[in-house]
Image 1 (tube, rainbow, N blue to C red):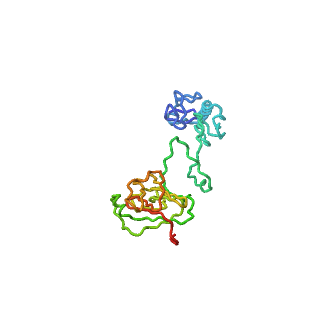
Image 2 (tube, helix red, strand yellow):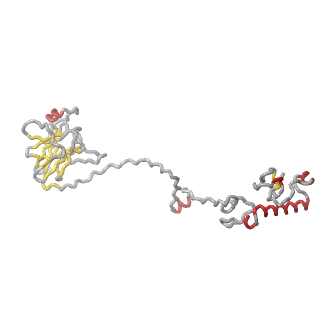
Image 3 (cartoon, rainbow, N blue to C red):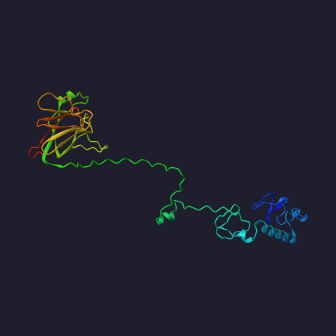
Length: 288
C-alpha cells in the first residue's frame, strides 16, 4: 500500500487509485516520508494516533505543494479564473485541462433548441464537413405555359377549312385508320402568323390550328403568314413534309422545302399528315 502526493492511500504502487497522480518510487510521498508503515499501521492498515495523523497531514501538505507548485497556481484556472480543488485535472467551471493546457471545446447550440425556435431565432448552420450536401428529391416539373402570339392581329376575318381527305390518305399510305370524312372544321385565324401542328403540354406547344388527331402531323409542322391580303406557307422541318397543290390536277408529290416560303394562290390546297387538307379563305359574313 502506498500514499500519493495528495495524501490518498492507494493499493497501486505507480499511480494513485483516487486522484491518478504518480507515486514516487518506493511508495514514499514527494515530501520524503518513508513508505514503510509502522507496526501500528501494519496491524490496522492506516496510521494510528495523533502523532501519526499529524505526520500524514504534514507530509500531505508538503507533497501537494511540491507537486503543483504554489497553491494559487494549482487552484486557479488560467482560462476562466475559477478556483478549483488542489491537483484537479480539469477546471470544474470551463473544462480547461490542467495537464495538457488544452482549451475547452466551444459548445455549439443544437439546431433543435426549443428556446431558439420559439423565440424566432435562426438555428445555427451545421459545420462544414467538406462533403457535398445530400441532393434533394427532384420536384415535379411544372406544366409549361404557352406564350401568347406576338404577331399582329388580322384586320380582316380569315378562316382555315380543315378537311379529312380520303384521296390524300390513300396517297400517304398511312397505317392509321381513316376517320369518317364529312364537313370541314372551320378554324378562325386571329393573327398574321399561324402555327400548324399538334399540341404538346410537355413542350409548351399550342398550335393555332391544332391537328392532334392526325398522327402524321409534327408538333411544329408548318407556319402560315400573311400581309393581310396574301398568304405564305413555310415547312418547319416536319417529319412527313408539307405539300402545296391546287383544285385542278393530281395530288402534289413534292414537298415544300423546309425553311422556304411558298405563296398560296387563290385555289391553293395544303396537304399534310396522313389525311389532312387545309384551305385558307376569307370568312363569310357572320362566320366568325
